[in-house]
Image 1 (cartoon, rainbow, N blue to C red):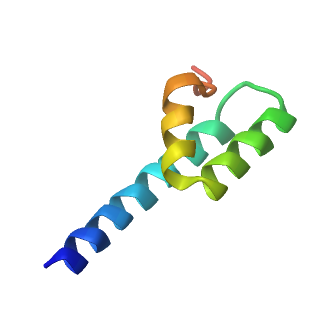
Image 2: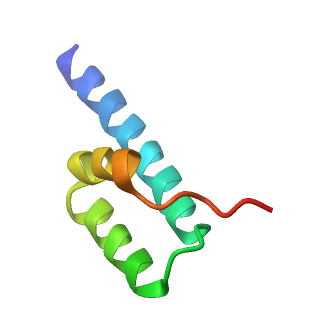
Length: 62
């Protein structure tokens, strides 16, 4: 049972990280900052996502 919960939690984290990366790419910040945010999200999946959620760049509004 715990393996299934871990698998579901990992999948949810993967989806959230993909959402964060897409949002970073769509933001109006500089390319260098985008690269840094993407690296942080990829290297520290949970902490990177939380940091992005709190202080990360926002998507550009049309």
